[in-house]
Length: 293
Ligand code: GUN
Image (tube, rainbow, N blue to C red; front, side):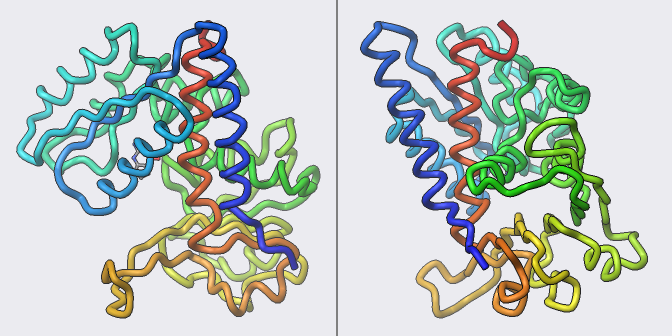
């Protein structure tokens, strides 16, 4: 059994990006510029955005943070997006989710210029990805693909079971694992909360991707001997022994599942760390105009 090391791989990806930015700087080129919009005071969002800004600094990107409190109106958020869409120095930007309940998230995402949508959430990027056209691939699925690639895990002809059908992870993950590419060429089953015989389906998986947000849901009796297990879950659960008061828990009961797996990602230290690296990768693509020219 091999534990997939997200810290190692995300460090490699970031080091490669840093090298590329240094070369751009040396040649007098445009330094990639990422902006983040953060609305409200969600603790997890604060942490994620801080980590994105910190990564920009480490890699040598320019970054901007636009903050508003939770009373910001939808019109105000749309106006910020309009400004960033028009700002020629901003290569890409993200709107950190979740947004306060009075703001329509679909409307907000659709207002982002798809050429600057480095989160890959805009319907144009999702649609292009589904068709196999060049597109920004959202951070978590991209991070999973990169881990599979860098560990040279065989995917062609395998049965991949994705558990969870979220717009951000499960749905794009299932499309990417079935496409005619590497990683890909899997026979994909997308299981979700209404799936009846979920245990039997999971037991058929050569590659099991858990992305449902239920800590410890995948137990050893649901995993085939030798399966590749990718845990996308990242749920905050109260833990008084931690300074922060919470611990991050994955969807897989790691201790019991790991002995059966050929490869497994830990939480924390697995997929989560890859997501920021993926966003940085997309920002570099945006600044080089590699997707939309
Ligand atoms: N909230 C949770 N994950 C993400 C992400 O990848 N991007 C944004 N913008 N918000 C998130």
